[in-house]
View 1 (cartoon, rainbow, N blue to C red):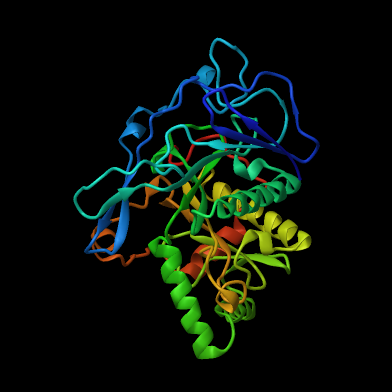
View 2 (view 1 turned 90 degrees about the vertical axis):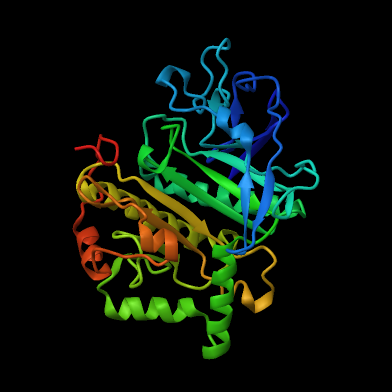
Length: 372
């Protein structure tokens, strides 16, 4: 993996990653030379026991611009600068211009509901210079590189000493609120452990104490033995519709052995993981013949998970949560999901897995998700 660290005119960091040595052939741009005055705030929710982020400056962020003003494409006209320079590279990462959290968030002073500074980091990850492509269009080598980029960002953010949990994710489709169509994802880094990884770490620790082995070992063995929910098995990595799937076509991509972080994967494991991930993404698009709207999250352990409670216990995985439950039918979170936190699924995972296995991963849709 090749990389080059740069600084944008407004002071934000930019890192370019490539399969070959990175080359920059233009000035390093920024849509504006002036930094956004970000003052994110966290307020404690005493009933749910979790933090809520407030970032009023985000109301001014870019919203569905026309293709000629794509801020994630390399700059072509210096009079209309974007976020990225021209050159040879595969993946770009830069600090979000409209962050929900910042490493140097100012103290907001006294406020209601245990108010404090929104300390953390928000980064944008541009998967490709091709504005019309998909994450699924990346080659195996490019997807393997992206896994390495996510691992590198996690390591760098941990090194700040201010971060306790890192979430890499991709929202795809206007149905889930995407405001830029260029293939990209984001990284949120928190100075605390959010509810999902905190609960997962607690559950996995309890399983290890009760059974003497990591949950993932038993899960992978059981899914392989039963076979009905496995979509693709590459030996060192596999994809499966979990038997407890909350979304109709929810798909997990997992290494075959328990690891806590992407950085823990060997080179061969990372390549297998990339092959399975690409296959899973293409099958989701082939399922209904449209670009499936989804939420992809990279679930890694909290950074301060100690000893065996980390690498030997926490199940690193990519969770793909598709938002179509049938052709043209979106999954909306209703009363039981929002009010009680318990999901209702219209289809058994065994049936969904069979449909995904039957989907042709070579099919390429040309319509956005939800359109017929």
